[in-house]
Image (cartoon, rainbow, N blue to C red; front, top):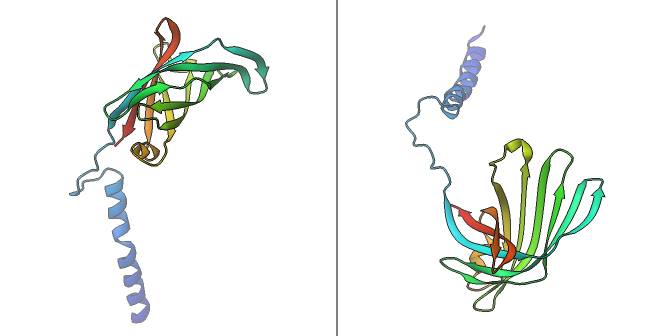
Length: 178
């Protein structure tokens, strides 16, 4: 091998030599760099959402559909509180695979009059076991102003059956991922 080819080969190896070290570090090898902190959850607010009688249109190509009207309720948290407006809906779907999907779309009215849209989706499957918790992925649309902080970030919700003022309801707690 001539000297110029040997020089080019050495230069090429020098370029790629750091890659195995980087791969070893990324795959859990020893590293002097600190690991990033895992995300944490910060409580935002909780709701009691009252529900009307479900409407059962029946089987569809996607599963058994159920539509539940949202009739009211209340919400409160450290930075916001108010009422759940009537007129929203929870579109539920029971699939042939044993999963249950929900997609709720409704409005909140903060005590200062601001109207905030909530679209909350979640899925739970029988295969997760009898004690499985229903987690949701809410998206908020708040007007510009004091509550616009709800428009950004990632949120997680927990949903439990409840009663509120003697009516069927769900108790939802929302957390922001930090």
